[in-house]
Length: 80
Image (tube, rainbow, N blue to C red; front, side, top):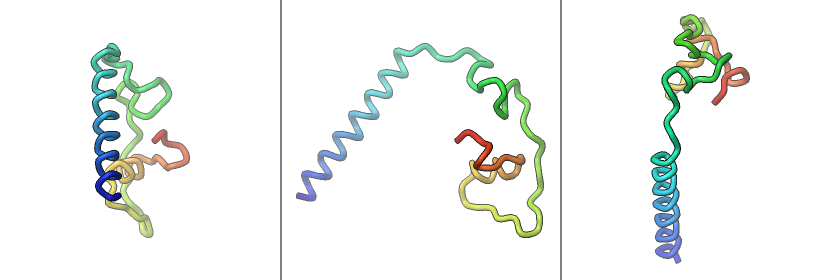
């Protein structure tokens, strides 16, 4: 039973990966300056100021979460 599940899982993952690769070949790429939506951090190359960790602040092993914390973002305001 384990072998059947692993085979199905591998086929499903390969199918998903192949389909997303084909879709990425078909869909035209976004032009420069159109990747980050207006009003979001990073639009036009403008990022929030860097904030040093304060006493009691906690950082984790995830670089994305640390980057948001270092630049004044929180999980409630940032688009993840």
